[in-house]
Image (cartoon, rainbow, N blue to C red; front, side, top):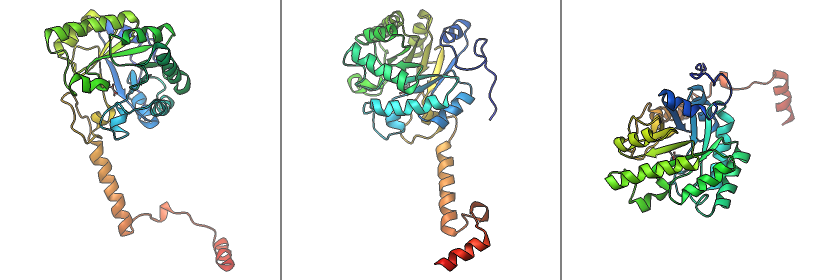
Length: 291
Ligand code: KIV
């Protein structure tokens, strides 16, 4: 697989330096983030030249088969993050803090974030929300852990938000989103995900911050965009949100291959000579003689 030439002056080899993200925003160059949950996918994302790989707690839905992101556990997220950091060498790897891992206290949040950095080699963590979470961000950043914020539709609180629906659609909600984004920036976030918010509101948040915004369902004026791996590749069978664009239909291709395999097995077309091992004639003869 060919490796694309790095686009950025300071990214000639190795890990993308985190400050480069702000530079990209300053220069008006778009930032690309994609989710991944295993090493081969992370290797492909690296080869495609993306800047950021998010080990999203969306794994609970697209990998583990749950109906929401809430059941994702620390142990599951640590295992997935370890796999991704083994595969993604150049992109920055962001581990999503699962529900329950940052709600209790600053100390407890710090302990969990440290596990992502020490045990799973994550470059940064992401946590959902503002308000009471701003202090958490400050505690993590104070300990030297880079934090990505996430506001708008925050799937871990979908029930409280009244479902998986767009946020910030009234003037008051939009004003609050801008205020939340500013607080998260002041607390030290290096970037903020804006999920399912009107494009005009995301544009205003993006204009007002000096850190990059990464949009998902937030219009084209964000500094970067993220999509969930399974949505982007056509691997997820649930109803896709309005903001998803499918770039491939890998699910159909996998099913076609599995049906072809099953057919070959049932009709005896697989395995063929080239797929089997032989042994020396004399060993075979000795084997039968010994039976
Ligand atoms: O968990 C996830 O994949 C996310 C992205 C949708 C931003 O939080």
